Image 1 (cartoon, rainbow, N blue to C red):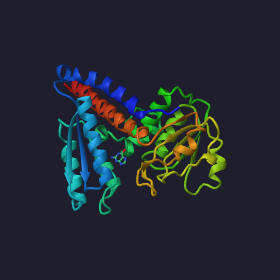
Image 2: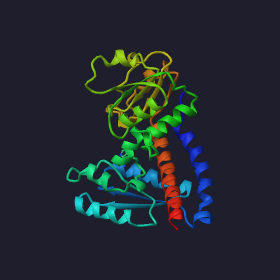
Image 3: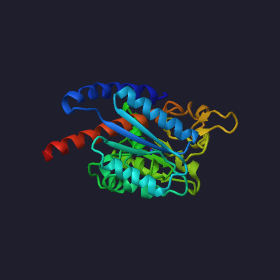
Image 4: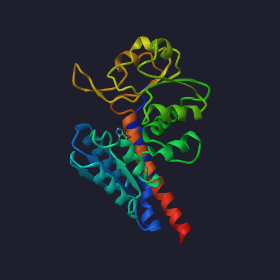
Length: 288
Ligand code: GUN
C-alpha cells in the first residue's frame, strides 16, 4: 500500500479551514504565521511557497519576509525580537539552512518558545523528552499521523530510524518510543546497517542520500517511511532516500516522494500555528 500524505494532508487542512473560519467571531482575528527566508536557495524558496499556499487554504494569515543572504546575524536576531514582541504574530519560522555566518542555534533560541511553530527551541525539545506539553516538530509529528492514518500498529514493534538529526531523526525516535515501539537509531557510522534494517517492522529513513535504502535492506511486510527529498543524480528528478521501485514490492506500506511525508510536514505546521494561536488567546484571556 502506498500512503498518500498529499491526500491525508488535504483532508486535515480542510478540517482546519473549518475550525479557523470560526476564529474571527470568537477571537477577533485568524492565526498569523511569519516565515523568514534568508537568501534564495531554490529548495528553500519552494518550501516557503508551499507554506504560504497551505496557509491560504487553511485561512491562516501568512507573512513571508525575504532577506538577502548578506543580512547579519544581529539584524536577523533583531527582526526575530521585534516579531516576538508583536502581539499580532502567533508563529515564527526561520527557514533552514541559514548562511554560514549566522548561527542556527542562536536563531532558534531567540524565537520565543510560545511562537516556535517548528518545535526547535531548546525548551520545546526538552519538554518533548520529558513528556511535557510542547510544540512538536512538524515532520516527526506528520510521520506519526501518517502511520496512524494507515492503520499501522506502532506499539510493541521494532522501529529503526536512519538519521539522528535534531529536525527529524531524534524527535521521531522519541515519538515512536512514546507510542511504545522499540526504537533503534542508526546513522552513517552504523556497522552492518542492512542486517539491522532487515529486522525493522517500521523503517524511517531520514539520511539525506538519494535511493540509499535498497530492496536487500528491507524484509517483506515492512512499513517504510521515506523522509528524503533529493535529486536523483541520474535523472535530475525528485527522489527520496529509499529506492522506491525496488522496495515498494516488499513493503506492506510505503510513502512516495514527492507526496508522502512532505505535505504532512506543512500540514503539521498549520496545526502548530493554530495551537500557538489558541494558547496565546487563552493566555490572553486569563490575564484579563
Ligand atoms: N528546512 C528543512 N526542514 C525544515 C523545517 O521543518 N523547518 C525549518 N524552519 N526549516 C527547514
